[in-house]
Image 1 (cartoon, rainbow, N blue to C red):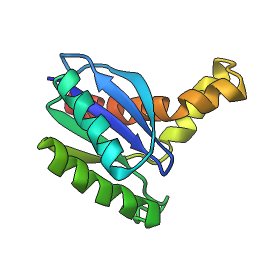
Image 2 (spheres, rainbow, N blue to C red; image 1 turned 90 degrees about the vertical axis):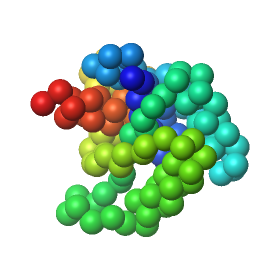
Image 3 (tube, helix red, strand yellow; image 1 turned 120 degrees about the vertical axis):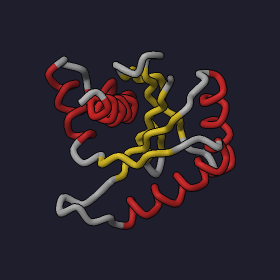
Image 4 (cartoon, rainbow, N blue to C red; image 1 turned 135 degrees about the horizontal axis):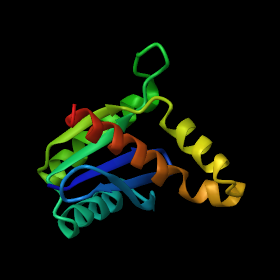
Length: 137
């Protein structure tokens, strides 16, 4: 069982992958978004390469729980990802994952430039780990 975690932004998509047993999440890369077609192709290739059977995508919600314009864009792209990969896709509340990722990197004393390069991958890891933790409860 491999699960792919996604932190979908307008410019990048952070990617994380679970271990085969589904206990831990590991950030693997950040995709620089080019076009929907290119993004979908790269995600499909990752799913095949890592033999993914489920995708978990972060759903950006407002702090009051409502879904704003960015959340709607993510939901539309997730439908396309689901159609392209033929895999189950779960939307996971991603509120504060980027904040948590930035805080962890600040505590690790990473420079602003290094943080910028890996924040999306880290956020995807937090999203996927949150989902994995919910399965074990």
